[in-house]
Structures are given as structure tokens and as C-alpha cells.
Image (cartoon, rainbow, N blue to C red):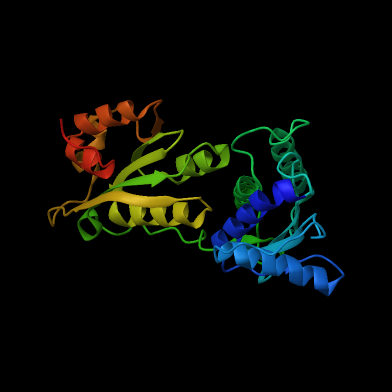
Length: 302
């Protein structure tokens, strides 16, 4: 246990920080063991050395409530088990509290298993595989299934908080203006998050999947603001707005599209994925936004 305890506590401390607003419950019948677990994790959160000897009880078992996803005013819960040998052995994570149609539940179960097998494969070897990443990916999958599930006021299905509002398009372009925004993410590998990026793209944008992840979006200000809000509602290790500008439009303007600068860089609307940061730089330069890109990426001009 000692050889893995330090890394386990570090990841549990990160989970505690990422989901600070979530109820955290230790799953053990012995209150003394629950107290030991809590003390060790809190010490890690505080940056202190936990007092753990060879008799420290391993196999952390706990649940966290995901307040972003609710059913009948109750959050969905993830039950998590870290084996003694984790990270050499994969963790087990099981969602609880969902009430989905059979088809959606089966799809979620299959995806949950696939995530854990993908991070395991007999041995837990992927450098990106961690309980933190698994929890983040699984929450994204649950959000995708919940948003895709048929819902009615009486079916009791769960909903993703804050995703129901869609800004009205009745406003004129003059009222909202045009907003351009560049977001930087710690990574942009999750296929579910990339699907959300495409689905929620309101007008124009481009993304560069990989490490780090870059997303540039442009369109009516209310739409772009809603787009950014939804993306931030997903769980990321890090997501920041590196650059943003708002362009006011003439009073008589009803159609914002002729004023979109990214439209000059590529022909199709929506999200365009490119392979490298250099590709993003080229597109931004064609749109007359080279200086903005360099500033956002903290790159000095040549």
C-alpha cells in the first residue's frame, strides 16, 4: 500500500478540489476507518504529509454527488473504489441515481465499461489514465446520455443543470454585437466533449484537438456567451478564456454573418478541426487575428 498511497492521496485531493461543491461520502461500516481516510485526504488537500503507517486501511471506497446532473432534485452519484494497487490496477466507478430508458441506460453501461477497460487493458498503463480522468470522462458521457434521452415533465428523467436555456434569436445583431473568443483547455481529447463542441457551435469556430486544446468561436454575442457557459459547465482539469473581443454593429444591422472575420478563413460554418497549433495560427492570420492569437498563446512577435 505504501508504494501507491502517496499518488492515491494526491489524486483524491485533486478530486476533492475539482468537486468541492459535491457531497463526499466514505463507504465503510467502520467510522474509525472513515475518519482515517478523511484525515489523510484532508492532509493532502492542505499540502501536509499524512500520518499513515503500514496498518493504514487501503482500498478507498467513496461516493461523490455530481450536482451538475440532477434527477427529481437529487444529484447523480458516482461510487468509486480504488484498489490497494491503484494505479497499477484500474479503479472501479459506477454511476447511481439515474433513471434512464433501457436503451440509454444500456449505452451508458457499455460506455462506462469501455472507459474503464480502455484505461485498464489488463494493466493500468496509459499515462493519461487516472481516477480523475475517468471521473471527468464518465461525467461527460452521462451528460451526453442525459441530453440525448427523451424527456417530459412527468417522466422523472434527470436533467443537466443550466443546459436547458437556449438564447433567443429574436434579438437583432445590433443588440448583441459579435463576440470572438479563444479558449484554452488542459486537453481536448474526449470524444464526448468534442461532440458537445460541434453540437453547441452556434455559428463559426475552429478547434485544435490535443494537448493543449484550443477553441476559437465567433458569432452573435448572446450565442457565444451561451456557448462558453455550456462548455465551462463541463468538467475540465483547466479551461480559461485567453482572449475575447466584442464588435459593435451598426444600428440597422440584422444579419451578423457578413461581419464574421473567421468566415474569410474557411468556407464552412460550424467547427473545423485542425491538426496543429500552427494550423490554428494560419487560420487566425487569414482572419486578421494573428496578433490576438499570439497574445492569447503568450507568444512574442518575431
